[in-house]
Structure formats: structure tokens, C-alpha cells
Amino acid sequence: MVLPSGFGLPPLPYLVALVGGTFLAAAVLVALEPPIDQRTVAALAPWMALGGALHALHQPPVELYDAVLAPLFGAPAVYLTTFVATGVVWIMLSMFGTRSGRDQEITRNLGLVGTGVLTVVLVLSAVTALRSGIADLIWPALAVLVSLFVAAITVLVVALWRTPVVIRARYAAPTVIFAHVFDGVSTAIGTDLLGVSERSPVPRAIMEFAGSLPTASAIGSGWLFVLVKIAVAVAVVALMDEYLNDEPVEASLLLSLVAAVGIGPATNNVVLFLFAG
Image 1 (tube, rainbow, N blue to C red):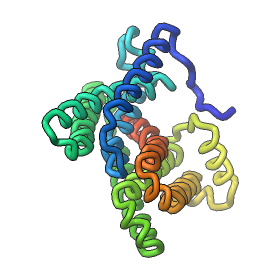
Image 2: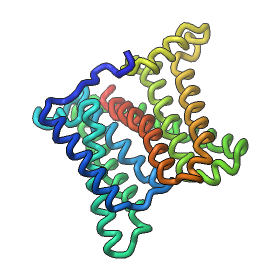
Image 3: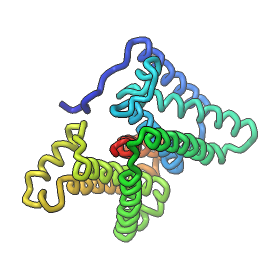
């Protein structure tokens, strides 16, 4: 089994609406041609995180959504829901930016709006957890702080190893590396410290292998997954260097997708940690 547990299509009317909205948003964005470069990778990061947070609020023990809205935030529907929301904001910013002659501000504003919306969702999630009496702020904070530290060290090491790569990808490289470090660290905390079972089969297999090693009793099993995520992120950044230089639009979109695979699940983890008390 390759897909995570709980992965299933929403009812047909929701699926049709989401797929139609996705194609429509994508078509309008293609027509508008907003500026896309490696800064777009960083600007889209909070929107990717937003998708993970919204999906977490759909999962037990939270399950905050009304029955009418719930199908929009399951997996994989939440990916399309997030894309449509991001696309609508991006379209509005692109139209306003083009009309006012401020095209260069579109990417920045996309990131600012995404950060604002994500902050509101995270604050509301924390307040909900506090009101329920089961809030635990320690593990989310620990996951973020450790991830920032490990990602910073990783970027520094890559910069010393391949300085031109980090200089050229100064926005995309830190975003991709942090996204996957965040996923690895949050997953390790959930597995080793909170006893959360991993839903995705590949990470679960990696950690099961680490759990069979003699070191498992001393340092747990999540460390190997963290190392794998770091290796994958660094490899992607290094391999995409020339592609980012030659085809900045295509490479930036691909790097955004790579970052989403890390930061979405990571944010999903830390929001669930809020309700682990």
C-alpha cells in the first residue's frame, strides 16, 4: 500500500466542484501569467502549511467541521481545496497588481496573505485546544524550534559545500530544506515521544527499520526518517540548480510541489500535537 490510511475521494458533487474549480483557477492563472520565480516557492509555503492545518482539524480527536464542509478537508480533497483558495487569492492579487502597475509586488503579497490566513487558523486552533482543556503547546513549539535549528545548520553546511547553489537558490533552497526537516522532526516527535502511529507507509517502513536497530532503545526510531528527509531535500536542491537557472518558472513550480510534500504533513502534525494533551 502506497497511499496513507484515510485516503479517499469525497462524494461526487464535491469532487466535481473541486476538480472544476482547480482547472478554472489554473486556467485563469495561466492566462494572467503572474511572475513566477524562486521567490514564489517561499510565498506559497504558508499556503501549503494552511492545507496541512485545515486537514488536521478534520481528523480525530478534533473534527471541527460541519458535515456539509467536512468532505472538502479530507485527503486528497484538501489539496484541491487549498489550491482553489490559493488560486483565487493569487488571481485577485495578479489582477490588482497588473492594473496598478505593481507586478513585482504580487509574489510578496501572496506570501503575506498566506501567512496572515495561516496565523489566524493556527491561533484559532490553539484557542480551541485550550478551551477543550487538552491543549499541549510544548510539542508544537519544540517541533518548530528544533526544525528551524536543524534546517539552519543544514543550509549552512550546504552553503559551505556548494556555495553557488545556495546563492542562486537563496529563496527556494531554505524553503525546501526547512519543509522537509519540519516534516521529519515533527514525525519523529509524534512517533518517539507521543506514540502516534504513522499513517503513510513509506515513513512507517523507514521508522520500523530504525526501530529494529540496536540503537532504538536509546534514541528511538524517528532519527532515521529525519536524516532521510534532509538527504532528499539537499539532493533536490543540488540537482535542481541548473534547471532553476535555465527554466525558472518550471523549476520553481516543481520546487513548490516538493516543498508542499514536506510542509503540509508537518503542519498537520503540529496542529494535531495541540490536541495531544
